[in-house]
Image 1 (cartoon, helix red, strand yellow):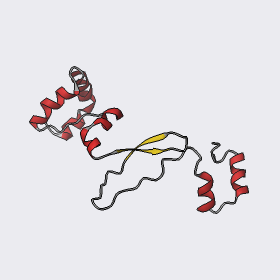
Image 2 (tube, helix red, strand yellow):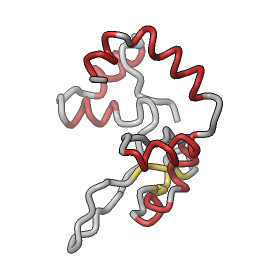
Image 3 (tube, one colour):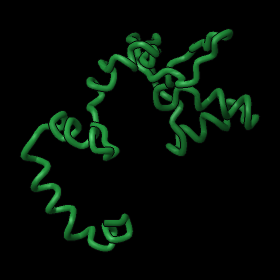
Amino acid sequence: VTNTDRLKNRDQLIPLLDDHLVRETTQYWISILEPVGVPCAPINRLDEVFAHPQVIHREMQIKLPHSAGTTAPLVANPIKFSGTKIEYTKSPPRRGEDTAYILKSVLKYDSAAIQNLNERQIIDIGTS
């Protein structure tokens, strides 16, 4: 009856629910649970997420050029401003791509120190 009771009996309850829920589709369960006030929603695969009408309407998927010579599919900022457009300028770096830059500009390492760390395999400054 209560969440406390469900948690207390969780080890017994979950296998019972699992066995029963697999007998019908996700849409079936949503169609009977939502009308009676049970909070529920599907757990979507990524292709389903980005095909969802609301995700498309809100332009939540973006693609940026990637340093590997391809494009990187990314998730857009969920916060939308009416007067200011968010600019996306850089795709995520490949492993080690920004390491030398960070060590030089933020931590003030010189090139010799960075090369030494890379040769000792303490860091990876990328090779391509």
